[in-house]
Amino acid sequence: MNKQEKCRVLGVLDDGVNSLSQSALAHLGQAQLVIGGERTLALFAVHIAPTAQQRDLSGALSQVPEWIRAAQAAGQRVVVLATGDPLCHGIAAYLASRLCIEAIEVIPNVSTLQLACARLGLPWQEMKFSSVHSKDAGDWVAGSEPSHGLYALLRDIRHNDRLAVLTSPFNTPDRIARMLVTEGLADDFEMAVAERLCQPEERIVSGISIQAATQMPFADPNVVLLWRSTLRAPQVLFGLPDVSFEQRHPEKGLITKNEVRAVSLARMQLRTDSVVWDIGAGSGSVGLEAARLCRMGHVYAIEKNVDDSAIVQRNRHAMGISNHTLVHGKAPEGLQNWPDPDAVFVGGSGGELAELIRLILQRLKADGWLVMNFVTIENLGLAVETLKSLGVAWDVLQLQASRSKPILHMNRMAAENPVWLVCAQKVAVQKTAKLEKSDD
Image 1: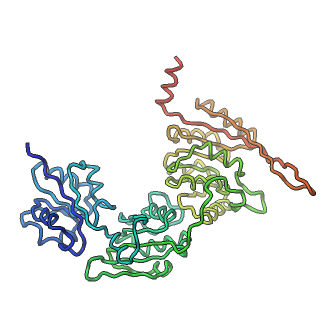
Image 2: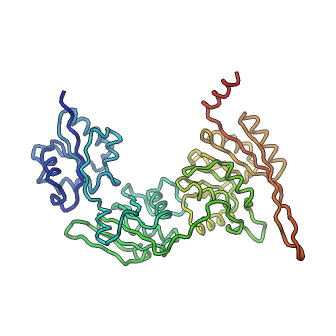
Image 3: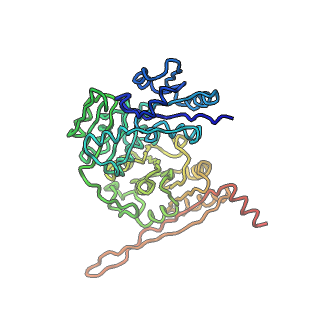
């Protein structure tokens, strides 16, 4: 039985044949099926055998693995043309995951991100390489969910000092610049744009302000380079003082106090990628601290009071948090549109507590935690009775902190109101069955 011919994934650049090694050029000339984008196929048309079949992958990416599989089964030699390094935000990883690594051979080229750095003399070993080379994302709106096409890029911008970004005809440099303005980051970064690399019309645009770039057109294809002009201040991730958050005044601020917030967050058992619900957000303190801890996850918050909703938004902006979506409304309305949570915090229920607990426990992921804060005996009793009726594991913790306050030339302890933390875990079915079996 003949050994199956590997599909060669060739990295190419826009200077055409000059970007290919003799070996890569030979593979292209011998190919019986050549797959690539319309522009790339046209660029190498004279080097493709007249008898070879050509397939345009534009808008048909999901079909490419089957094209390759069928051609290999027929004993044909296949080449896929990919821009730059096919393993750097390219097609090679996609193909390897749907075929197998043994079915392909990657012959890389210089990434266009590396080329852009070279043009500006910027070392790239510490750069974050990102991509918005996807469908039209639309302009960024503060508080957008992870489904937005610019979401991952903004997360990268928040956590890195230097970035190189692959753009698209839709997700353009001016759109990225407008996102930075929206998030209050315009003064923190400098931008350069490398247009049409390796083409006669190549141009490097640098020394422009983010604000100016919001209205500038750039030739496609292009690469964006971003680097910080203002150093990031180290952030406190956990246990922020209450004064870090704006609160409603002159009324008493609706905020989960520092001591209770710390224990509540600890009981939620958060991970860096957790999806969190914050119900009855108040000033937003719990949800916003959770967003800092879950930097690869997302927090969905809801608050019924319009003034408090505005405060949450201002706190989010002041703290530079992007992985947080706020809805102005009354739970449980609207929760059906949120993804299932890993952890839920309830700071206020709006009189729908029993219904809310049932809904949360239906949606909560296996081994997820529900943490509720109460200051009234009635809500405490209702929560416990509801959890009992649902047959879930629960516990109650009472916290009562006292803080020192000056009195004349001495100090006294001033007690805060007691708070009950009611915690429940949704135990995985397999784990429950195993525990029951061990009790027999």
